[in-house]
Length: 445
Image 1: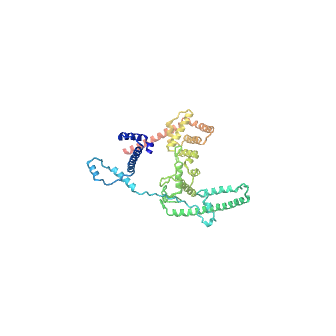
Image 2: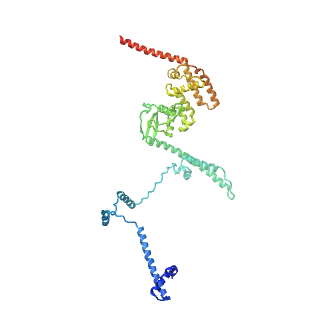
Image 3: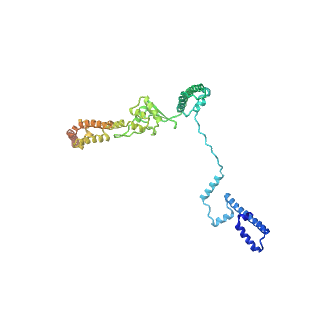
């Protein structure tokens, strides 16, 4: 009696209900009959319940079919306005999902990257050692050669003898290994030499198909006397420059300055205004040097491995000195005027003398060839050169003291400059008055 054991409360209520309803005594035969009937009804109830739950779960799992056309009842409901119509966005999304569901899934296989063939020697030339060459670590000649050298160095040292093994066998194997390793090394060098020959040949064949962009130098706009070629493999074009003008152009870009502050620029292509790559600069500067056009700036840039940051950091003092001399050489430039005026004013302040600003402003612009102004220029250049080149504070102070001692007599009142200024002013007025009087006489006649 499984029900009597599993559901005792339900069985007790069912038994009381039968006794009250039937009104008879509860015998063993009747108890077995009603218990079997009770089991039957409970089994039927559980079966119907399981069927109902299974049908609900099956309906939930099955996808609902999407019909493009509505039934007549749905159409009438839509026309009555009881159900909102499908918007364009909803329709578009529904059609997209339907097309995505119907579209078959295609698995795309990624193509394997092509590996360049490094060893181009024929198999009969390698004498059965091609497996050794291909299994060396690395993808280039330098890496493979380094790997082979490491293995040779290891095998040069005799291995310690192992008890129970013949030491002569290990020694013979070691010598055989070294002989084969030397052969492999010779094959590596031979293969690399052939690769370089083929590379040069194919590169020349590619360059023969390139288009020449210009027929005159873009800087001087003149025909080429010593052409320098720049090959752009990505654009399949050839740019041509005059060696002298290109070397001067790169030199000016590297020594560009703002007053006494160096502000070098990375070299650019004069035609496209694009920065030269390191490999392009190597080729261009090499061609210029072979044609006899170079300078200390270009050599310093080459020594800095074509890196502008390293170039500025290593050669900061020469660049500052070059910027100073360049700004002091242009006597009509504002950098020269400001530098010389500030130097003369600072020396007057050091020596406690009054600075005649108007007189010296006029002298810097109109009387630079006078003896006093020539001395000021030389001492100004010496002052700033000492400040740039000398690092030791005591030594720098000593040299600057020598300059200050020489500027002390120059800080005396510049009477000759004042007299010269007045004399030139008088001559100018006389010339103006003479021209006016001549014009008045001609008019009167």
